[in-house]
Length: 197
Image 1 (cartoon, one colour):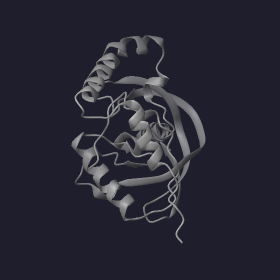
Image 2: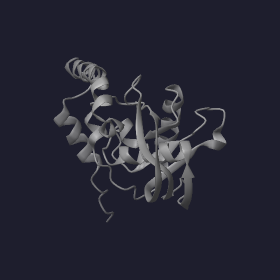
Image 3: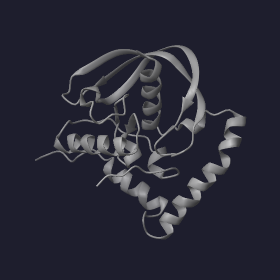
Image 4: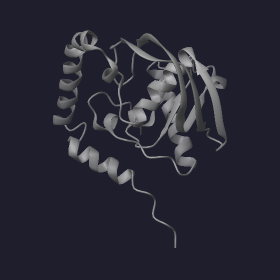
């Protein structure tokens, strides 16, 4: 069963590998991720936020589980063009309650694959652009706190220490294995499947 992991879980810094096959397991993960995202009132969720080391994420910019027609899945996403920039507030489901202004490209041109294996080419701006960039960063192990200026980073420091303390306590109580074991598990999942025959 999947769950959203919180900073500083090592999966959040783990470089994801491309998805090579769209199968029932992937579809099941996607459905579970949408349920988790809605429960947390989010608009996007990347695979490594649920400790899966694969390059895909989901979006529903309405955050409304009733609006299934707004659900989008992006597999092996790439941002091919960025245009101008704008600063706006961001949060992250792996940092509950932490919000800060982040500067990102205002408009982007992207490619990815959907859950049916169709190639997607899209231009986006506003919330779509911001969410797409935020989630794509996740897949490379980059977090929105990495983009904060000195003042914003200073004001977030106590909250980050609190996340760190809570996570270490969860490890001590056996809720999570130690960092080295988590990375070993991610590495094991990250191996290509053995060839048949």
